[in-house]
Amino acid sequence: MKKLFKSLWILLGFVLIEERANGQEENAALWGKTSQSSVWEDEVSTYAIDGVFTTWAHTNSETDPWWRVDLLKVYRVNRVTITNRNDHASRINGAVIRIGNFLDIYSNTICAVISSLASSATATFSCGGMEGRYMVVHIPGDQKMLTLCEVGVYGYLSGNRAVGGAATQSSTSGSWFAEKAIDGNRGLQQLYTGCSSTPAETNPWWRLDLRDVYRVSIVVVTNRHDCCAERINRAEIHIGNSLENNGTNNPICAVIPSIPAGKSYNYSCDWMVGRYVIVYIPGDQKTLTLCEVEVYGYLAENLAVNGVATQSSTSGDGFAEKAVDRGLLQFYTGCSSTTSQTNPWWRLDLRDIYRVSKVVVTNRHDCCAEQINRAEIHIGNSLENNGNNNPICAVIPAIPAGESYNYSCDGMEGRYVNLMIPGDMKTLTLCEVKVYGKGPCLKRSFVRMQFNSSNDLTDPSMREHVLKQLGSALADRGLTDVKLRWSQTPKPVIQKVNDAKRRCRKEN
Ligand SMILES: *[C@@H]1O[C@H](CO)[C@@H](O)[C@H](O)[C@H]1NC(C)=O
Ligand SMILES: *[C@@H]1O[C@H](CO)[C@@H](O)[C@H](O)[C@H]1NC(C)=O
Ligand SMILES: *[C@@H]1O[C@H](CO)[C@@H](O)[C@H](O)[C@H]1NC(C)=O
Ligand SMILES: *[C@@H]1O[C@H](CO)[C@@H](O)[C@H](O)[C@H]1NC(C)=O
Image (cartoon, rainbow, N blue to C red):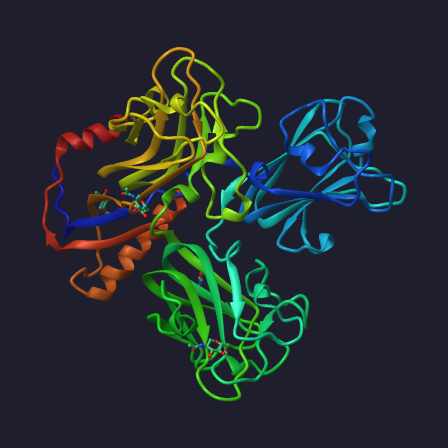
């Protein structure tokens, strides 16, 4: 039996897919700065992240002891792992794990409470992507001591690039320091202390140094909520690399018409490039108050900063991450190093595909500079043989001790950058690896779709509606960063249904 449909639309869609955040999680604690409420004997806070199971961070017996790691940037934390010491296991009972952006412990959100944990056991607490720069473990109560053998904080960098930058402003009113606009919280909890502010003056400005050049997609500004919301009106957001006139000569991303009290508004900057973000109000007797400035975008230059590093083996505390300084030069922590082994390698996952123009490698300066000789730089998308089968950009002949050499890769495409030394009894030590290039490359694919529709797809608003529906169908499947557009206007066709296909469907 043949059936004729009234109309069957043939639709051609152009689907732009950007793959994101599917890289490995990293243990952000390894990069963090630790502290604790007190130190018992010499059992310092860093012992909880040294990878050694026979040392632990230990406070005195006191009221409400705590241990904290500052991850230096805002992370979306998926899980926290805690390894208990091999004796006095019950001391951990009742410890609370919190994550958030506040230095005040109790303002952060609770991820988990440890009821008990066997000696030498490692427990994993799921935090479901809680956002925060700080992870705190504390034990409420009197005469408590907190001991932590090992702590891991696993997650991804969150999108806000402002945290970890350096903020300054034209002048400061009281304790309304410039940094308070990038403390990671929108400042609305602490009425008078959570925001930055200048006094009333001529042409006040606030400036953020992102420490690296970014392509900025949006800037989010949070206005004060206690009073005088209208003071933000006509503030200009500038982005660029110039410090001329305190940065106010850089191009304008947006002029803020107004922001209601306590609200956060987004300003789209269309990938403007710059290291500095300036908020500036021209005029006399102006006060610039900012409760939070968030900056979203991608690194325009050194791509290594947001990558995840791993290596074939680790010698001592020569963690793979140490070859990537995260744009936090002041926290420079040394070099990565493998043990002496066969074909040692180090790999950076850029998390997206980039076209790499060059790789800069800094050699160790203390000794044995020749160990780097014949290291190969590989770039590509394959993880076959741990990524060491990807095409070679360069083979390093030699780098003098402590020097940085550039290797041009001429736009090679890849998500993974590997360094590998072929041979036996080799040690790969890297003090810094920087990767420059363009991207992320968006994965583009055409999708040809066929479906029934009684709607009139010659109507542009109906076509938009169908795209939206398709977008939400893809979002349900986890593809959220997808841009869709029609590559061809759909045409109505009359089609006969193929008998064979229908039989097929019945049999299934
Ligand atoms: C930069 O800002 C300071 C503080 O407001 C001001 O004194 C100085 O004149 C400004 N410089 C320029 C060139 O605008
Ligand atoms: C503003 O930007 C943030 C961060 O990307 C995003 O989560 C939010 O949905 C945006 N809001 C609007 C109204 O665009
Ligand atoms: C290496 O790259 C850096 C960073 O872009 C640049 O400043 C430097 O001039 C380059 N050196 C050489 C020799 O190409
Ligand atoms: C089109 O719609 C008709 C009537 O609802 C249905 O029987 C047929 O299976 C549909 N065909 C496709 C390709 O979805």
